[in-house]
Amino acid sequence: MPTPKAYSVKAYSAASATAPLAGTTISRREPTETDVQIRIQYCGVCHSDLHYARDEWHFTQFPAVPGHEIIGQVTAVGSAVTKFKVGDIAGVGCLVDSCRTCPDCQAGLEQFCTSMVMTYGSSDKHLGGPTHGGYSQSITVAEDFVLKIPANLDPAAAAPRLCAGITTFSPLHHWKVGKGQKVGVVGLGGLGHMGVKFAHALGAHVVLFTTSAGKADDAKRLGADEVVLSKDEAQMAKHANSFDFILDTVAATHDLNAYLNLLKRDGNLTLVGAPEKPLPVAAFPLIFRRRSLNGSLIGGLPETQEMLDFCGKHNITADIEMIKMEEINTAYERMLKSDVKYRFVIDMASL
Ligand SMILES: [Zn+2]
Ligand SMILES: [Zn+2]
Image (tube, rainbow, N blue to C red; front, side):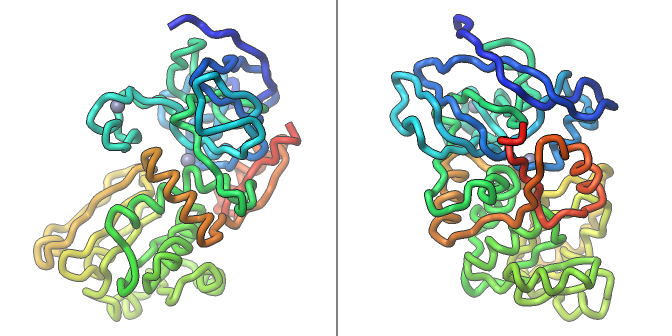
């Protein structure tokens, strides 16, 4: 394809794996006929941003501009764009393109496309070099990968929906969690707090598992019906064989077998956290009650829009702490200590 015209925007980037993030300038393409240009107002801070900036997954192309929970106002649209007009509030999540023809893309499951283009860290088909994320003033994205944000949602608090939100909604939706079911959420961090809100809004009886007793009040405020201290074997034993579904959001090493034993026959444990080292799984808890263990990755474009519409209908947003762009390095350090309730969002007007 021909190289489109580019324009310069301010951004925040890491120059190397050990450098703090700092101000820079990057190029964005002028919208092609199928593109939407967005002035970024808010960008959520995901743990993946930190992994990418510090090259912890070993694919970072520097300079690295993270950010994939993007909300902003449409400033221009290409001539063939039909779903967006200038002035609309729009969102961009973890993906900005895919092959669009493989079985996964055809099924609206673009997150599984082997040619998916991530919002940051993929190769930019238009301008060359790496794709750059939302820690920037503006972004240009193909219309099919831009999401509509319901007008009643606070745009800053809606930003974390675009990664953390869809990551927790997708498995609950896929496994048809709803009324009359008992659902567990393991961990009350950025992902877990959204899992609790969604499971509650879907009508399930929600049990939050945590290692810190101090989180009980907050969990109940967010929608948990019960809170269980996962280190307390007696409390755990009371819930044996009783769960339809458990969403595990923990990225640290922990005992999966303890949770498998809490599932009913045909119950399901879904992982969305990604511990660095493999976790041992015993066969007996799976065999004896035909339980399943599986994982889930963000969501495709249709499901992400469905999740946003669900949030609009039930007025669900994230609990956020707003920061200025220059505070990002401190925010990363606090995120590493789980010192955030429950998601940082950057006010991009501060860039
Ligand atoms: Zn993310
Ligand atoms: Zn594909």
